[in-house]
Amino acid sequence: MFLEVKNIKKAFHKEQVISLLNFTLEAHKTLSILGKSGCGKTTMLKIIAGLESPDSGDILLNSLRINEQAPEKRGIVYLYQEDLLFPHLTVFENIAFGLRIKKVDKNIIAEKVNTMIQRLELEGQADKMPHQLSGGQRQRVSFGRAIITNPSLLLLDEPFGSLDAGTRTRMQLLFKKLAEEFSITSLFVTHDLKEAILMGDEIGYMEKGNLKVYKDRDSFINDPMTGVQNEISFWDSLNTKKENEPMNEEVKIKNETE
Amino acid sequence: MKRKRSTISIAFFILVGVVPFAAAFIYALLYSFGIVGVVNTGFTTQFWETVITSGEFFKSFAYSALIAALSVIISVSTALWLTLKFRKELDKKFLSYIIYLPLAIPGVVAAFFTYQLLSKSGFFSRIAYQFGWIQEARFFPDLVNDQMAIGIIITFITVVVPFFLLLFLNVYKNERIQELSELSASLGAKPNQVLWRISLPVILHKTWVLIVLYFIFLLGAYEIPLILGQESPQMLSVLIIRELKQYDLSKISEGYVAAVIYTVTVSVAAVILFSKRKRIAHEA
Image 1 (cartoon, chains in turn orange, blue):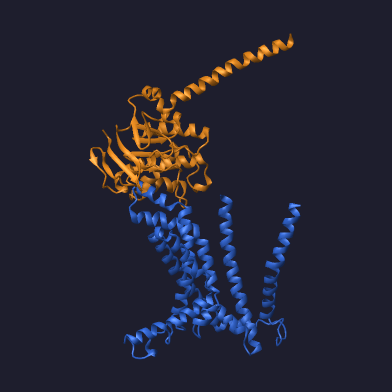
Image 2 (tube, rainbow over the protein chains, first blue to last red):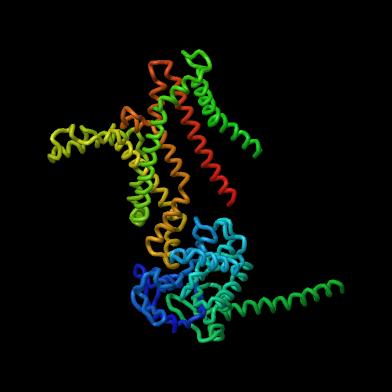
């Protein structure tokens, strides 16, 4: 297994945020994790990224224990809910950041960044500052900045939460495309049911610091805890209502004419 | 109605903010060319020639600029260091309240404090004498009214650091530098790379206009250099006031020449500064 999370526990001021976390993830797969606000998703990602320390448990990446490794040495990129672009750098420099700090050759940086800009459909935006971009464009830059460093693991913390429905759909498609193209291994945290199903090769549900990973999509859909069944019933009831409404209207009109 | 109110506001601003300043500037300009003034007899460039050739004004300008620049650099560096090193501690209620206190102390009081502490008859001199480090009070190093302007610089720093500290702490929070730092570490940046490529540039990018404005403010400071400065060269405002209050009435015009040059220089700097800032705002 590429990522193994074993018996992770974490508490803040006696409040147990992560109870007992155990899961694995294969390389080049995306595990989407559904969970309500405050269920410990962000803490879990920060622990894996090295930005928080667990109280106990182990994290293994490629069979190597990385608990004591500094965040910058893990090769794990954690993307916040917001795009968090560096406000003093242009789009080009934001994307190039990870390469610049590794002192990669200037020509290689230019080539890689320009290719990434094309892939992200951001042609003509390279010299713009972050405040000159739309929400969707900013999020794309944020992806590009992370992916260009070729991270071993990408941690996405509700990355599309602040986007409108249309942009969100476009970004989901773009992420799927990039994940395939760059063989990305990722944990995709979301509180959107549809997004969890769409984005993950595997799906997990997190509640009160516990994560349950489902063996397949159907098990996830059929588990009443995930809320999928409720959602299906809701849309079904709407459909039934819609089907009945025109009939009633017709009858009403007919009666009135008579 | 809205338009009328805005016209009244603009008229009020011009009346209160622009007219007195413009009138004072025109008066100074006319005085500097000998057109007005008790003993002046008519248009002459003599006062301008005297000021420009004597070199005292430019020496004073350079001296003031150096003191202001040094004070701003040391203050900004200290405030940055405190912000990045002790941010969590400074967030605590008591300390955050303490930072505000020095801001309430007027420049003239701060200058007297410094004088009481650092002069040859001051607190530290007496301590040094009591410990036997100096034989007499006169052997205490010149820290006020001195050539190196140490007293002025120390007082400027004392007054300015709390302001920059509060400013940087706010920018740190508003620009989410903690999260940006974590993100850059996650992208592979080492702690010193996070500092030099993210934390410092972001803070300075957001505050450089205020830093420059504070430099201009210190350039024209009056009370502190008046109390703690030396006879020659003097800082600009002290020199200008000295010239304007001379017994020799014919010398007053030279004071106005200095005031005009200083005003024009600072105004041009401010216009360049704000036009650049406005352009950035328009791009946004």
